[in-house]
Image (cartoon, rainbow, N blue to C red; front, side, top):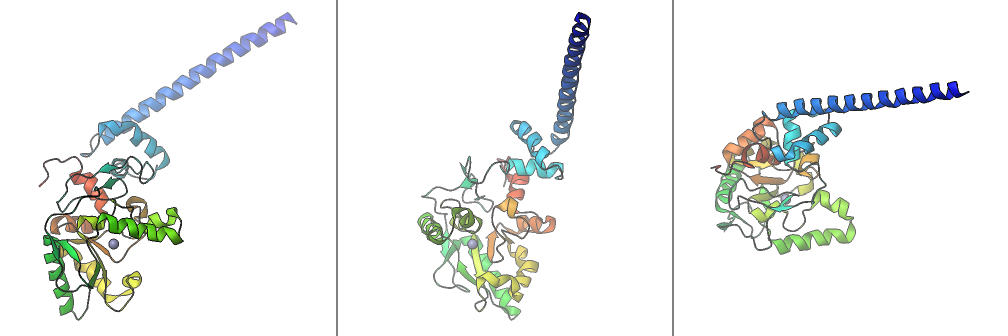
Length: 279
Ligand SMILES: [Zn+2]
């Protein structure tokens, strides 16, 4: 009997030893793989050392994403819930200001050089001067094709957005409203670089079905405008597809975004976020 107990104890001891051996080996292997993975990510220009552990964690749940997308999406804070750890956006009064669910402008922010749109507009609407000039040029060229576009919303201040969002909340859940309306301070319309469009006859919700939309899809970038919330990019922008919402970013950025089929958020991480001297 004693002998059996002795053998069992020895076996148990060996088993525990093997278990620890196996455990540490796996852990070391994992550490080694993570190190190797980080080494490859470090080669990416916009890699941020402080985000190391977040890249590793994000890769575990998004294993089909390539390295660039892992770094981009973590730098955009997409490993966090929308509207958490929000921060005031830098680069105010530039064409590359980013306003989204993580970056906001404060209550008082009013862009410099707002100008009233003089043609192709439903009522009195304002855009930043450069965007206004380019919008009007685009509209004139649209008319040459016997088509029509019209601004139905452009610059909106903080209070306007606050009321709009709250109005939606009366009939809809916060979760739903967040997919189509920005919380105050987080609306790109406050940048004065954004314009919502229709073609004067079709409801803006159906703008996608119009010839004007097709024309813009081909040509808007030449005037510096991009479709800001495209189809299939909802997880990145945080918004449902909006065929009517255009953002002015200037011709160079718009061309790049169109050519590479990325969102402005992704462009921002890759070329602006860490480039303090960007011009
Ligand atoms: Zn809009």
